[in-house]
Length: 79
Image 1 (cartoon, one colour):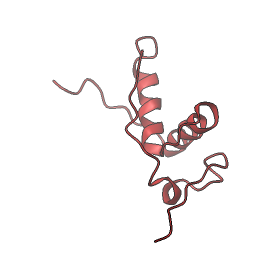
Image 2: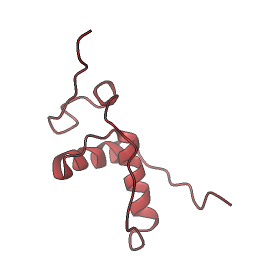
Image 3: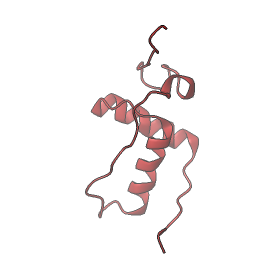
Image 4: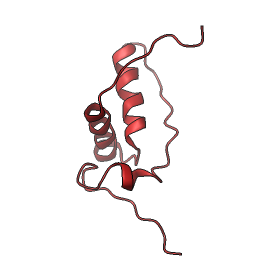
């Protein structure tokens, strides 16, 4: 099987992890990446040696306002 496990992650946990990544690592990521981190740490904390985040933060503003992102917000360039 290609899928080893399915891990449910609450929205608040995903937002918290994304905020933590922004504050501590300077990574501008969305809540889906936060959810991936939470799930990976919950599933195999001692086995985790690397995790790839496929996130550019380009859709972050509508999803996670600056107040939830630890003061980090993105803006789109004016046309």
